[in-house]
Length: 210
Image (cartoon, rainbow, N blue to C red; front, side, top):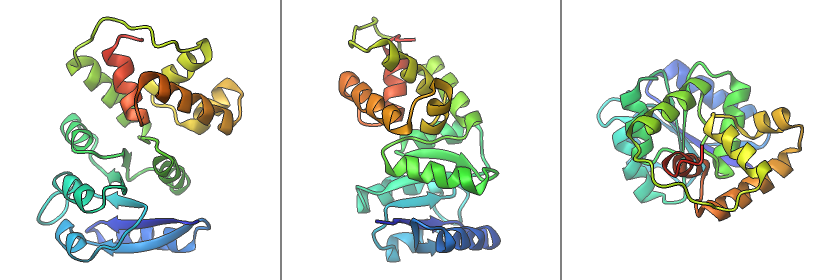
């Protein structure tokens, strides 16, 4: 089944470039395209993932995340923005964003990020992943280290996730297949009792695994 992507972006030329990408890329289908949260809340139909800008007329993208999640609980929301400051990153993640990508990201990387998010990942541009890691190191209370029974390979892959690597990066770095990476990540989730990459990273930091 193709991935259905909807867009909330007020900058018309950029919105139209996104529309072109998802109208012409195999494995994807364009859902709705709106210029504000208010329009989306009124008329959006079900989709697999929403590409969401932050700086919008009316409600901001960050304010819109919980509203959209409440209306479409299963939808993935990927922030696509120019902002890379700590405040916007932190608020977006706390409000439930499934990933945070900068607009300067090349189209192929954006496609990979969407696929990753739909598969349950939490894609982030490298600079955002680093900032997120620094934020949680700074603010998350560290608990006493607990033995979760992770294997050496699972610890190695979890370390890669903490450092912001996606599945493709991990596959290349460790010379293993994408499916093997996914299998290890699934086992990591089970052992840490989490359901996403962002939760795994946060727990690894809070529990002092690294």
